[in-house]
Length: 403
Ligand SMILES: Cc1ncc(COP(=O)(O)O)c(C=O)c1O
Image 1 (tube, rainbow, N blue to C red):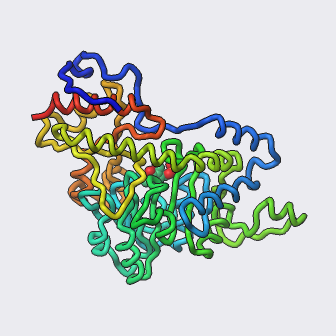
Image 2: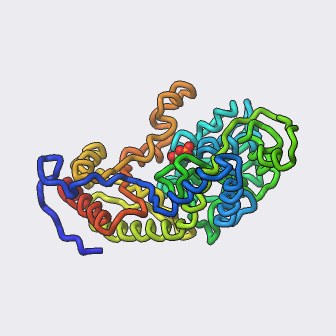
Image 3: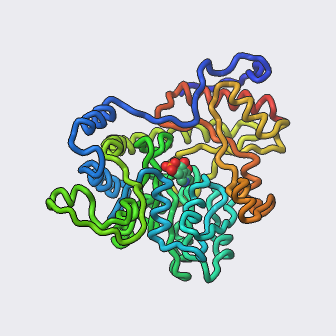
């Protein structure tokens, strides 16, 4: 990747030429010919859903994260709902999670009629803070949902310790973190249940899709039934047995992932290692470049983890800049760099404010980070030139507003 020279041109937002002619999104899927062929051949097969590709994908996925069971779902959100059900969440129960996440993490607790309780994040990683979490445990607490924000694993050992002491279930939201390692082990093999998403910007995509991994066979059995109406056998087993009998034993949903989607997932999983390697290469290049830029703070990485880099969220040091986040964001977008913001904290959404009475100041670490966060483009299909463009655009904008 080339050397970056200082730039003093007019910003695109002020009428200057943008760094890029075309818009670079913050995330994008990588689909190749083998992916397309796998989908086409499944479309020509006998099974569009509830067929052999589902088990094949689940087994390959379980092997890739090093866990006993993987149960596929129609989305990451459905997978979170399944995990909340399997953890036994019900009205009157509380589950503790982070404000610095996509709303689906907290919503799954509400789907079960239970109450999400938020605890603030650690200021460096923006992951759920174990000390803040411990302070929120009550006799009603039943589960903790740490999120591996941006692909940086949460402090899983501390949460498992809390779980042991208080009899809780750890449902890790690893929707950002497929392939991330915590103390040398892949996430997905550590928490009681771990949830993944296969949305197109994630490491592996099936269009929409999700997975729960677990080493607990009882959780796995419950998850399989939950995604299939609460019914105790699947269509293929019945067809094989030539039978008709099935029983619904609890109220479940149709959250099944199709064979068409699983065929794509199997192919995508084969490219996971290359995908991770490229994301890590881009992250290293960003971190090395940004140290010199005024007001730009790269994301922190703790020594015990190897992140999966779903996102690359920088933080602005606003004291060193003469513009706020909104203006820097607009300036980068004008340079055709597709920045984004992850996340508006959960408690600041109107639904949560109105239903639970949350207010500004409740979670200072998450709120202070939110004011300063900008996610830069991060996906394996980025060329070296794309990466250079992001570096140049950030240098141009930070230098302009730096003081
Ligand atoms: C942290 C987190 N949790 C849950 C989800 C929900 O996943 P899905 O979009 O597959 O339903 C997402 C998706 O963006 C996410 O980022």
